[in-house]
Each structure stands twice: as C-alpha cells, then as structure tokens.
Image (cartoon, rainbow, N blue to C red; front, side):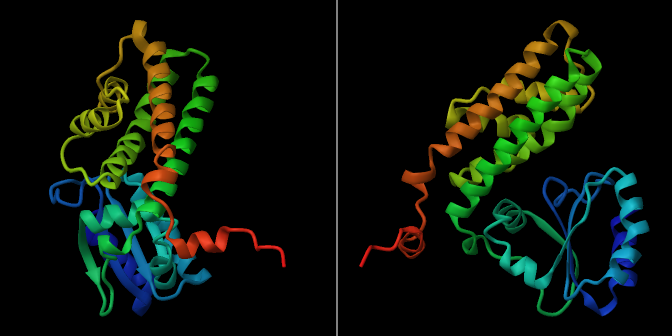
Length: 253
C-alpha cells in the first residue's frame, strides 16, 4: 500500500473526523522509500465503527513492511507531549504532511520539555534492555534466534540514541552508524555493538563465532546507556519548581 492509498483509505474510514496524517522518522525526507514508514494519524473523534473500518487498512499497511499506525484523537495528541515526548520531538524535527485539515499542525519543538523527554527516554531504554534480556534467555544460544534478536531490536535502539542526542542538543541527522558514533563520543557507550546490530538488520550476518559476544555487548550497551540517561535526571533536567512543589509532602500543621 502506497502512502497516497493509505490517505485515501483513512479518509474513507474516518470521514470528516480525519484531521491530519504525516510521516515522521527516517523516511520523512525520503520520498522514494516504499516501506518502513512511521505514520501519525490524528482524528477529532474515534469510535468502534471507525476502528472496525480500520482493520483491513491496518493489516494491509503492516503487511507492506510498515510499523503500526500511531492513531490518536486531537485531544490525546495535544495532551501527550509529556508521555510521548520522544515521538513529539521526532515529529517536530522531521516530518512530511500527507493530509491536513484546518487547524492541524505538529507541536513545535519548543513545546516539549527536556524533563519529559529524559523521563520517557529512560523508560524506553530500560524496557528495550529488558526485552533484549528476555529474548536472549529465550534464544538459548541458538544462532538463528540471536541474529533475529539483534536485527529486530537494532532500529529501536538507534531511534532512542537519536533521542539521546536530541536531548543534549546534538545533531541527529545522518546514517545509523553516525548516530552510534556520536552517542559514543557523548556518553562513552561503545558504538560497535549497535553498528553490528544495524548491519545484522540489513542482512550482513554476524559471524557465528562472534554472536554470543555481540548479543552480550548489545545488551550491556543498552544497560549502560540507560544508566547514563538516569544519571542526568536530578542535575541536568530538573522539573520546574511548580512541579516540585506538588511532589513535596505537606508540612505538618
């Protein structure tokens, strides 16, 4: 399914409720790309009829090699800057509008708080670390499963590394290998395990003799990056005083 076909199907499913459709992430500037598109869909309202109508559309979209559509109501989109800070910042930086009704526009980067970005980033990195850990246990040293593990998690790892650079006001454009190198220079977390995972994702198999070491280094790199982001919490990205005041226990009378 092409992007133009997707927009037509979304218009049929949502009618006048459709507010905006945009591509974000690595393919936003690549008009020749035919798969791997991250797409945001914003609607005024969402009901069961619309969800049922979306079933076949979503299935065809994902079968074409694309991630699941990120579908939010307008209210959810506007109120999600704190919990979806990574997605909001990614979209603010790189996006291509496919459809826009009157009144729809991506949030500007200035509307996204560093504290929210850091908090979500730590959560996502830890979740990814735990996912890799569980997959490593399940693989039981099987070469095929270990290669699948690296390939399956490489993209998300690089996406989160881009968020690390964005949080530190560093340039995040460029190939995945460049992003890994920039993160190594910033954090000290070695780029090599992530570069190997990216290569595996693109079909360049890690040699069997190196597989267990590659998986271990990938896991340990994610854990180290999680710890690095966690260490930025209190000093570099404090919550505003108004937020902190809400968190302090009430003084006894």
